[in-house]
Length: 207
Ligand SMILES: Nc1ncnc2c1ncn2[C@@H]1O[C@H](COP(=O)(O)OP(=O)(O)OP(=O)(O)O)[C@@H](O)[C@H]1O
Image (cartoon, rainbow, N blue to C red; front, side, top):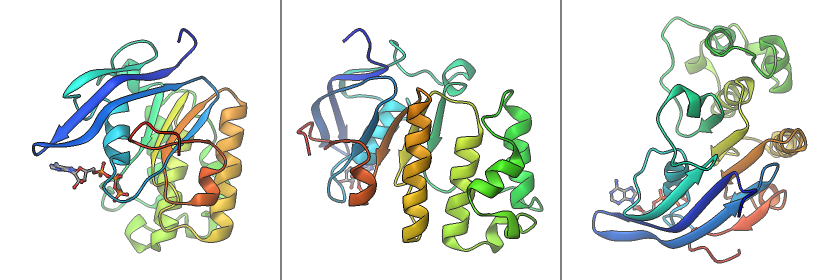
């Protein structure tokens, strides 16, 4: 489809000799939110890794912005990925991690103060990430992901560790991102969050 921003064409991935994704066809339009849902081990993270160019296809094709994902500044200037918890810099506070993200990316989507406020981290801004709770650290990861400029968000279980009220707030933030023309593909086990997007399963069958 000509207006797709992300597509997979018969995407097949085998890991350790086992098929994880089989002939998956997915098309995502700009401004869409897609929720990849399915049980543990069904291939959600593998799909996201393929879209980020971190997992090669065994066969088939992945296209993002009309080209195979590429590990270069041009690609990562438009794609923000939330995966596993990153390595935190020793000695830097939560605020300083966000400042670092703002400093390396021109035209951040929001100021550090706004990010701290949006993600309810003001009171813990001067703590090192490892002194934060699990949910607070996840909010810091999300703040960092949403602060950097992007037009595509790839989120692997963004709800991890978040309480109910912050999950609802996350849904609002993702809808705002999509309303501004951004595209979201997220793997999620949160049924409420998934209702904010078009639901697909890694088997390619509409969920
Ligand atoms: N490096 C690897 N080598 C072999 N098999 C792997 C590897 N990584 C993942 N797998 C297998 O691939 C399958 C899909 O894993 P994946 O992490 O994509 O699932 P998922 O749907 O994201 O699961 P979860 O809901 O638990 O996060 C699983 O059966 C997993 O055991």
